[in-house]
Length: 216
Image: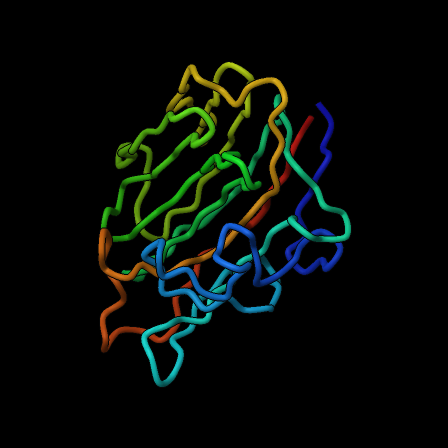
């Protein structure tokens, strides 16, 4: 397999910052999805994705990068493998994710994470309805942990790996003609399903995507 996408989170050719059709009217907020996000137009040097408390309200300025609308317009396809190295956040309310998106049911969640469930990774195939909430305490999953993710977007099964170990094969897949843009972001939970940041807590949340590549 050859590397067809190697993320540079400062690249204005690879990434568009602060807007996505996954958010109503391309952003900047998405309260309907239980997020306190107000999207930033900033890129993310060093792969550091941050959220900063905004003054005068309960929204947070959040980083979101997507290949949708970018000059290169990269899309993952059936058969591709996405590999990423990440460091999880530690602060309550932080909601990091790597996922795919294109209008018409193309979303696959490489992972989502919430520090109030400290050993849990949420992985989902919204194309064909497969998901798992994987408890990885024995694998070292915890706030602040660093580890490798790998997701294979197979036609008949989407397979997720952590540090080289298969944690879920959904046996559903994405079908033969699937393709979708990449999104990497940090959202902030509004408290509906996961703890929101405490009022007197930190004014900045963050996590790190050290590397992200797609092989074909």
